Image 1 (tube, rainbow, N blue to C red):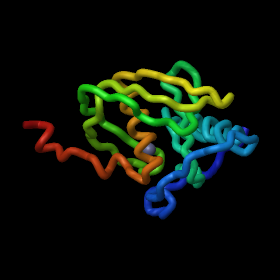
Image 2 (cartoon, protein in one colour; image 1 turned 120 degrees about the vertical axis):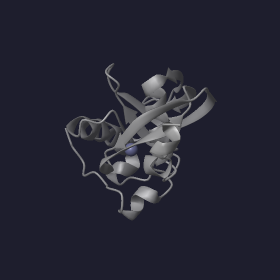
Image 3 (cartoon, rainbow, N blue to C red; image 1 turned 90 degrees about the vertical axis):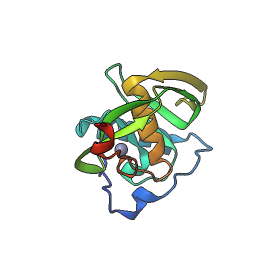
Image 4 (spheres, rainbow, N blue to C red; image 1 turned 135 degrees about the horizontal axis):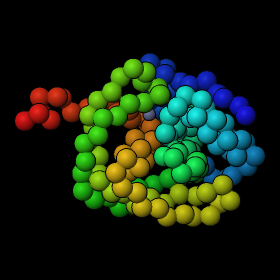
Length: 152
Ligand code: ZN
């Protein structure tokens, strides 16, 4: 088990774009394992590699059904919309309402290099969109809807 240091907003790496992983080697497998450990240690439901200072397109999440490790995840379809109050391990003690698709279909490579397709709804869709934004250097605080608009 290896918990890595979390990178926090203000650290310039958080705003950088992550690169495609073209070779799943031992370092990538170790990175994914460490990301899962780091996510659990900090009681998160999702984590992108950039949050532990690695600019590679790797994401882990666990919404209560065990860890899912995703390499080069991409959204291929989205529909509907939902507003959810988000937080982020890299933006401590801040939450805000963000509009996301209600449902997304994604494809990614698993640890064995197989292409996987997955459709997610509700909180899982929120989590996927939030983590994929990290790969572009985007944070949920960039997308917060002001309260007065929500309450209209
Ligand atoms: Zn986050």
